[in-house]
Image (cartoon, rainbow, N blue to C red; front, top):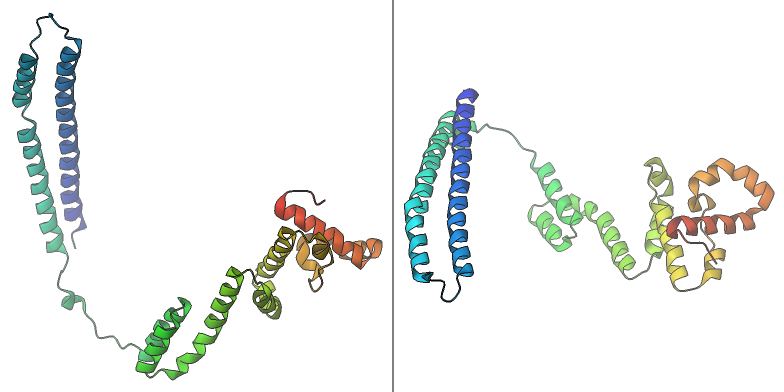
Length: 256
């Protein structure tokens, strides 16, 4: 494959395009200048000045005909089209447009392809379509792929309804796995739960909310000063301090 030939043809097209652009811009500027001059003459003309408006328009028309923008633009565009046509022929000559010449006999694992398609449907929440596909493809083993995504979409619907409990329960059940992956999902869900409580104005419930692991409220600070703070403040007071700090980090506002 002669890539240099393709590059040379492309360079010629690029050069023609730049030339066409420059010429077009010059013509537009010339036409605009003549129109502006004629407009100034008409605006500056006053009654009794002896300026014939019809003569000004006729003069403008004559100058525009002299410039010949249509003919000039047409010629420039024609040259560009010729270069583009030649470039297309060069590309067609270097590459084989017939896909049959690039075809190879490759054995595909139909089962894996079906599983990928079914997984895509379930991931997009198209459960009926996914069920129909695995039924027609006789891939009944793919039904096990559906359950995690059904659970995920159910949690999302509950979250839209401002119910975080299903998501919190799932995050708690998979806490160790989330930690191994470096995910802060569980912490963010609990933080969102605090914000919901505070939005309802129930500050006391936010301070006494049970069932939230202390390390989630401020994980880095808690890991660093855990033993010292527990010994000095006690577990209950420490929980309150961490919640207040969490609120400040989330909102940037002091807690009153």
